[in-house]
Amino acid sequence: MSLSVSTQVSPIGSILIQQSSSTSDADTNVTGAPATVFMLDVDNTANAAEDAFLKLYDDLSPTVGTTAPDMVVRVPQGIRRQVVIPEGLAFVVGLSFATVTTGGTAGTTDLGSDVVVRAICQ
Figure (cartoon, rainbow, N blue to C red):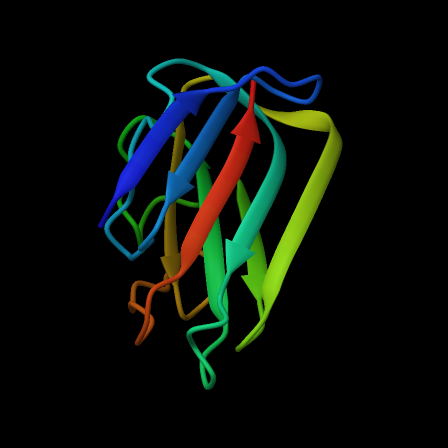
C-alpha cells in the first residue's frame, strides 16, 4: 500500500489524498484532523470481475466489518468513478476509509487487484 497526502492550492480543497492500493485494512485518520470531502475518484479498472465498495468512516480507527460506514461508494467492475460533493461531506472526528467487495457494514473481503482512491478535502 502506498498512501500519500499532499497540500494543494485549489478552489475546491487544499488536501489531496491518494492511496494506490486501497484494501480492507482501513487507512485511518488520513488527514490527521477533521476534514470535509469535496471529491472522490475511485479507480477499479484493474478488477474486471469484482465491484469495489469504498467505505468512508467519520472515525479515527474504524474496525472494517464492525464499524458502520458513514458513506459507501459502489464502483462497478472495470470502471473508474468520480463523485463530486459540491457542499462537501464533513468528517468531524477524522477521515478513514477502506475498499472491499461488499457494501454495508459487514463486508471485509479484499479485491483481487489494486483499487486506487483519491480524495480532495479541506
